[in-house]
Length: 231
Image 1 (tube, one colour):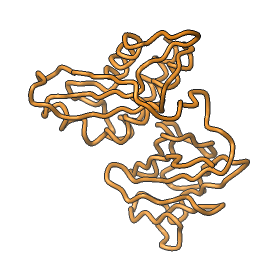
Image 2 (cartoon, rainbow, N blue to C red):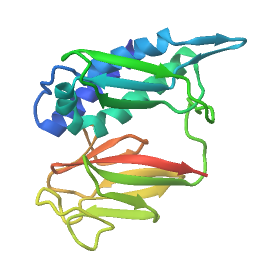
Image 3 (cartoon, rainbow, N blue to C red):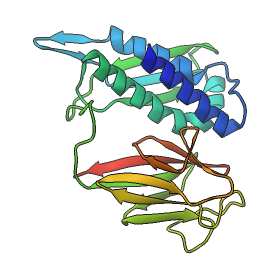
């Protein structure tokens, strides 16, 4: 229950950061977490020595409900995937591949309701616990429609200054707003004394070790951090 409560609070903080107010759509993102958790539990397959659960979830919404959620899908989908992965780990379940959540519109679905299908897809078994050590390749993507920046150097500067590695042309961004350093194989985000602050998953930070799927807010801009390869 504690895991679900943390997920709900994180989603609430993210959406307030995105909209500046409470999300008012008919389908609440936290409700999707409840529903997908139940679908995972109901779809478990018991085999000798292991219990596998679905790793792929397709969510179908009425077009109007899809339209209200579409702007925040890049924010909430990674959080749903993290939540379901953590929930499977907490329960001792196994995943046949990494958790994938897809959200689509379907005119046959009644407004205000959700239809979900699940599957156990083939692939490398998900590491469920944590990413293996090694060299991490990662990206930052401006929500909701890009651009995407690859974090390919030991230090990445972020700000309004065109000389920054990640140049963000917004008056709410300081010229040198933040930077990301690789420390012991981890991406660590630092605020550089910016005017409007640096937030990760809705919480103000001066230093933060990033995790794949984290949502960073600089000024009024949102960016998602994603690990794209570990070798």
